[in-house]
Every structure is written in C-alpha cells, then in structure tokens.
Length: 370
Image 1: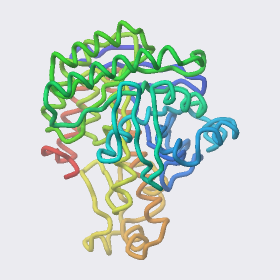
Image 2 (image 1 turned 60 degrees about the horizontal axis):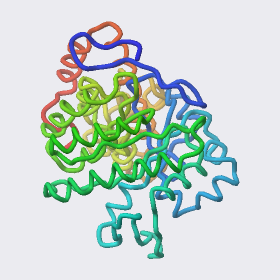
Image 3 (image 1 turned 135 degrees about the vertical axis):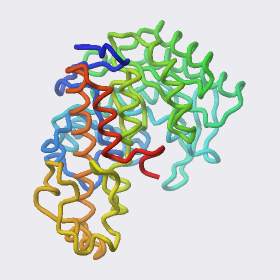
C-alpha cells in the first residue's frame, strides 16, 4: 500500500504480478472465455487495461484447460501480455441451481452446453487454474444466494473455509500464481467476521469478498463492506467480486476495496448503452439520430475521438458489429479512466470532493444504470 486516505478507508497501492505491476484501485475487464467481448488485446492495452479476468468454469467446459495449457497458458493462448485473474468457477457452478449437487468433497453439476456431468473439487479447481496459468487465482468457494437462511449461510461459509484450506494445500505453483481466499457469509455480520478470521489464519496473499451484488440493496452491500473490509490485512489486496457500476466502484474504494471486475460495461454496450460523465446514454434511441457529438466529450477513447453518436446509432440500428465494438471500447475506457482519477484523488487526499463532483455531474440517484 502506497497511501491511505486520511478521510476515508480508501487505499492507493500496487499489486506485483509476473506480467506487470497493477496500480490500485483498479477495474478489471472481464474476458469470460479468454476474450473480452468485441475488444482485442491490443485495444485493451491502448485503453489502459493492465489486468483482465477470465472464467475457470467456462474455460474448463470449453475448450478445456488441458488445451489452454498446451498452448502455453492463457497469456499465450489469447496473446495478452498483461496480468490475468481467474475466478474459481464457484459462482457459475452454484448459479446452475437445478443442475448441481453440493457435497463436502465437491460439486457435481451438468454442463450448460450439452448436459454432460462433471465433478469439481477444490483440488480440481486449483488443477484447472494451475493449467490456465493466471497470475492470480481464486479458492473454490460456496456462494450462498441472497436472501438466504442463517443456517444455510453458516454451513456454506464453513465449507468455504474448509475448501480454502484444501485449495491452499493443493496449490503448488505459488511463485507464479497468487491464490486468494474468498470471504463469504451472505449479509450476516458474525458470519462475515468469522469467515475473515478463518481465512486470515490460512494466510493467503490476497482476499476477495464474495456473495455481494447478487440482488441485495446497495445500502446493505455497503453495510457489509463497512464491517468486512477493515477485518482484512492492510498489507494485502482486497477484491470485491462482480461489481462494475460507477457508484459501486467509488463506494467500494471508499470502504477500502482495491480490485473490482464486472461484465456490465460490455454487456450494456451490446444493447447500445454507454456510460458517460453525465450519466448513461442509450445511443440506439431516436433522440440521437442527428446528434453529431461524441458519446462523451470528456472521454479520450478511440470511439469518442473519431465518431459521433449519430454514426454509432446508425451502426447499432443496422446491426453492424462495429457499433457494439465502439460502445464496448468506450465503456471499458470510461471505467478504467474513472479509476485513474480515483487513484489521483486518493494521492491528493481529495476523494470525498471527487466523489461529490462526480455524482453531481453524473446525476446520481440510487442505482445508476437502472
């Protein structure tokens, strides 16, 4: 950690990986299947991305971790020179609901592609991620849903700890891959506290907070972060999984979170929705038919420097792939630049002022993208 904000819980730090230094706080674009949708690795580099996330479950199902390993690992397979984080696949497996069966040894589930049966244990999750070769890998966890009864949440949290210990025991490539533990416990304070305590005793190089942004109100998520983040070691990265709206990023940083990821910027781009400094813009809407201004006059991305809302709307209405690509590039750059500005605000000890100015300009009212 380089600096801690004197007025909030925000931290300015650096995460060292075999594929570069990551300045934090950071937003990580999601490349679920070894590809950030509609965006090339060269473009990711150009917009300032230093680390991306890929999905263990999806790459295990297709094309298979053995094939990726034969290709030299994810970096060579997708020709990405920056850092990579892979999640454990736990969230995807547990979201299958009717297609999976949880046991102490692991989880039996059916592929969403062809219905084939698979069995993932903590050891198998680590084996897959070792083969994929990501710089940061995640322990296999049980992600309980929200809402969730206390007893089930407690059982899932305790199993997550046991699985985390098994993951650490089976992880051999410790010099090149940092294994993070995942704090669970739904929205129960005592369970989050116990989960953090147990995982800290296992001494991971970093910690994630899982099981949030899964349907609970924003205020409840912030409350959980308020009492969970301070429990985690000051000297190690803190990662809030699956969060990507501008307000969640800023509020997460204020509460001491260093790393974020989400599919949101590319997902909404495919519907023609752009994030801008003055709020969301649905470019495909008729109001922009003769709007010859850029998506965001304050943005420095390729789309905003070279094309108008009217042109991009035309592309999207015509089902031209370029339209989706341009909005995707813009949204990713918007969040990456947001975090660049957040880092500067922390360094200058002006994060509360930055937050206030950003929200005023953005027109923040509750959930920003609803």
